[in-house]
Length: 104
Length: 156
Image (cartoon, rainbow over all chains, first blue to last red; front, side, top):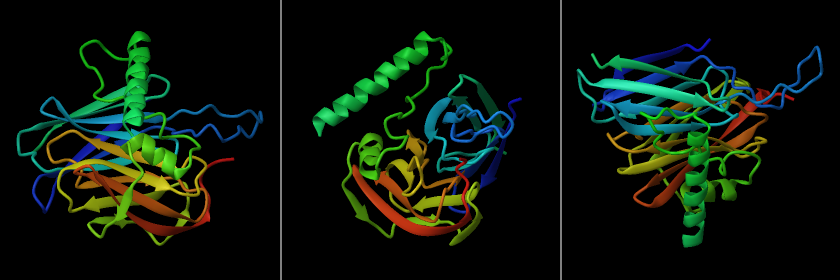
């Protein structure tokens, strides 16, 4: 089910912008199922870690207030061509996914 | 203040220990930081700031900018982008004042000059000011913008 895509764009100020699109329902736990009237349990990504060449450089903390299929982007100032960027996320139900790409 | 930092640290350590015990973390790869549970949820803004940044002393600054629509048609998807020219950014936090859970998302910076920009798409229940906080060099700077919402997107 999980599918995560990443795009790395060269930034005008140097370094790169890393853009991640994770496929995820991001349920708040406030919505109700229209058929049964029961509450849909919360299901959301908690943390998304960005690593440059194997070292963690940033971690995004997400909550239920982030939209469905989160699109997160972060700027890396010291990345250069040939570096590897790895992004991995974990949600509140223990599901996780990761994606790795080399900076072109 | 010190007590708060201590408490925050011990809570973070214990949640990490629980996660590790439940086998959520693979042995080769341990998360750099635990999810700041005490910042999320239906907490007032000051409390969330205290939990996430360790302080709620804030100064307004034009070195922090927020790029967001003035009016959002669909509250379920509101694109926001926080940018800053400040050096040594430690963390970034976004708070939607009138949401059921005001603290929406945050970024913790660990290196490589990450933190000059952070963008995400957020949900908004109703028209509300969106406050962006950037902690740099031990101080918290903020900027705010009101986003008008025609259709809320927080479920219910």
